[in-house]
Image (cartoon, rainbow, N blue to C red; front, side, top):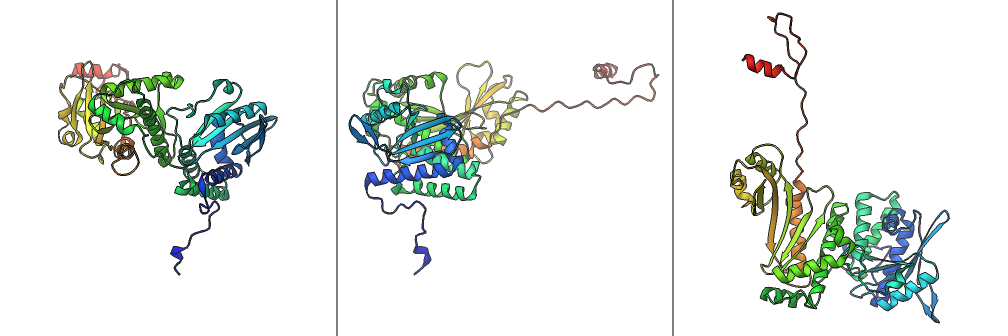
Length: 448
């Protein structure tokens, strides 16, 4: 028998998982156990929640009495540092199972009675905006206990970034974290990627195409929320590959009140058929804006690049083109001139490579900025796979970042150079100073 057919022994096996209950129990135990032995990983997860630095103690299915009933939260995390004690209950869902409001409210009651700090929920649900929980509960129960959420995509991305990019101090701990990654990446673990755009995707897409969708349509908010969830998932996915924290770009107003963004997206979807959002990549020249035009069936990504502040218009165009040597010819480049109204001059990169003047409408006007964009055909299917909306967004983002964005560096002026000292003229009468003066060039020009 060939060894190629043998299955390697794993610290956290996926075999023997029978049903959702067993899946949730194994995922909870695997995650909490690894957190207790890999402090680099647990600190990355828990520090943003307000937990002190320290190695956590973790437990599963801790029993509590609530209104005469025995209740078993999936897990408990406790971190102690000095006199400070931080404790959080954990509720886990895997697969397509959603968190339940009544169950979470019961756990919040227990946490308040036990003077715990937080309730952490983990599921495949991705909230549309940071800090927003995917499940609504009675807000009065949140006065003393924080309710925080991790998606499995976030947990997996955090684990990969920690192991592959930030590093784990102990080799054995790094191996253990790798075993958790292997487990969560397996389809039987129940830690799924974002898989579909929701039950209302097809009907909303068809209504947009027909021009009959209204902002008040009860089916539209789900699609809008799923689009923002897709942007967050795309950010996690790209950040996982880059080894950095890629996040959705939101205004202060949108962060303070998620309803503001939802309202704006609903108006845009009903009015123009467009869904738009941006992600911020550390070190990139600008946020990447992702646009889904449901009427035109197009996905596009673009960045706005400030033009150099010196040089002729064609020189500024060449500065940008030189940085996109590997970009495909169908990338669109638009140039905006200072003190000009309306849109800028636009042309495909292949044309601009041959003739930089194609972007210069008026040589006398200074170019202020460029917009570089890539467009592809939008997938129509609600699920994952070939021809799906989700994959068309992810593939366009990957191609645009890899071919364009990662190669563009912001312009910076050249540093000033020291002026060479003036060599005295042998025929000089000796009365004038030979020290360098700011007026020397002017005097020499007059004498010439």
